[in-house]
Amino acid sequence: MSEFITEIHSTGYVLSTDPSRLDVAAVHGWLSNESYWARNISRATVERAIAHSLNFGLYAPDGRQAGFCRVVTDRATFAWLCDVFVLPEHRGHGLAKWLVKQMLAHPDLQNLRRHLLATFDAHTLYQRFGYEPLDRPDRWLEIKHPNPYG
Image (tube, rainbow, N blue to C red; front, side, top):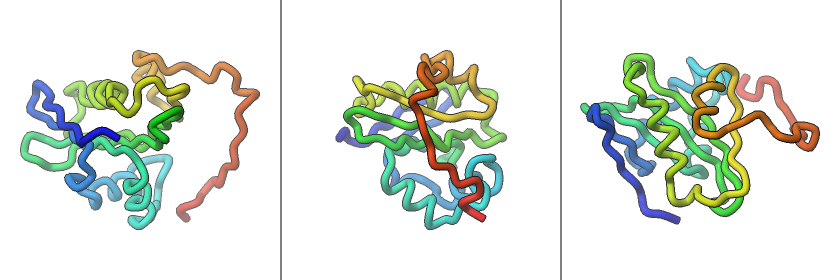
């Protein structure tokens, strides 16, 4: 497992994989209130997800949380990118692209058999990084709970 990584964007934004830097209240607030995939998720669930994931915090030049993504991974064969967001007041600087680019460059995510993600509306963002529709969707199965967070 790699040490924590910190990168600085040309605009002064900072990306860090150090989970102790995360403003968990801000991450939870956005996921619970603004996302379409985790509406009403509990703070305890977000904390547990963060504890068991590789996290990428995005911070404004003043240090406040500006965005986030996390990767569920075994760091050997598989990675699932999820919970990607940039807060509205920080959009328009190419930060989502930078966040995904830095995530894909992380040393623990190299030479994996598969990277997955699910998105409703950001296909073009992810396709520029090589993500494609499932090659064989007929091989994939899921157990889906339509409203797990109430």
